[in-house]
Length: 306
Length: 306
Image (cartoon, one colour):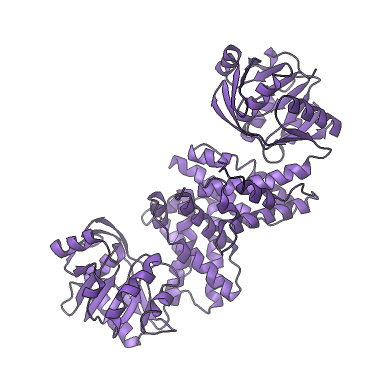
């Protein structure tokens, strides 16, 4: 049996921990002691597409958790550095998997220990209602690939474990084509949504008239594609088609960066848009529109303190 | 001399109140707001702030009551030009019509309805405090010149400029008014939407080096479109941007477009960045940043329809 520790219990971490607890032993590493106490006392409730209460172990000290075979780092990109530092020297023998948005999460973790590493991106989404209650909203897949000291078979084994718990997951021999498709999609849709405060709806696919929003979305996607091509990545899906399909699903998704600006919270623009812009810089690709969107979102964050 | 001010918002009221003080000028103020018109007819049109004036124009909401005029001064928001001039054109069968509006393309719209058109641009600004009472925030110059495809005689341009100057609104009659107009349009298009998208005041936009660089990128595209038409700017819009950022000038000023967005009023984006993109397209000058900004602000407006 693969024993799992989920580190970081936001909406994605909570969804993974609760579902996996139905098929294996799961522990949760939290940042706050009262969060761990709430999980141990009340269990972790899932509503929405699933409906159950999971029983699991939780602590805010990694040393207090039982030994595991797999650690899933499920915090936001902005918290990854401090989380990786907290688990340095812990979880000997375990494989560590990242699920952050953007690029470069694996390198951040690799600098803090010599665990074998898996890399993942997730398209599922949830809404956290309390420390011990998460709603499962979008049942889209999590994609997993090898990064350091792991193989495609390791990735598929973890994907099968997650799939057996009631979530969707797929393992790949090389995650980068999927990871880059998602990065380009995410940077574009999140940035435009954060600035316009439009949910991801039909406006993002409108390309009929000059000045239509879909034309900007397509230009942003094209800058991302040029960057991927220069990095030698063959994309798994066309991010423009992902965008059009998502707007045709009929329900209006609120991208996380839109929720962040509405709540006046810092967004993930640095780890999502910033990582695309830095990759473009390394490969000598000009991305003036992504740069403009990035600067505008950073400035909008600064306006909270006006 | 009979002058009709078409659209008696803040800027229109500055012209109407000041011009009504001249003995040789009769002013009719045309506006759709019955409350504003009634207040003007009952107690006069009061300006306070940069200048304290009590003007006595005759005001009306009914275009049929305007009567034949020597001059029109159109001061509506740009999206209302067509409706305003279509309603009032009969009054100008033997007169000349000037625009002092924001943006590009107002002259073209006016010329579809009247024969003699005066291109204009004005820097004074204010806001309506209550019906019949306008705060005069900033004094400034106005420049008028014949609209080339459908020009008013230069003697008419000089007559109107002389009247405005005598009324306390310094106005220059020039053979080619495109330079000042494009300088203001480029300034507005580079700064207004950046404030509107980020929520930052003009000074805070300018003190962020990365955002100031975005403003410069927008200015450069505008300058290229002006240069392609052979327009010589009377000053560098960059200087205007830096000047306006000074604490004693406009550091804390919220761009009018930001005020519009906060109040969820339609903005003039189609006539600012949209105008630069349209002219750029006709001239073969690329304007990708202005097009991106245009789409984003339109997206903001669309987010209010939900």
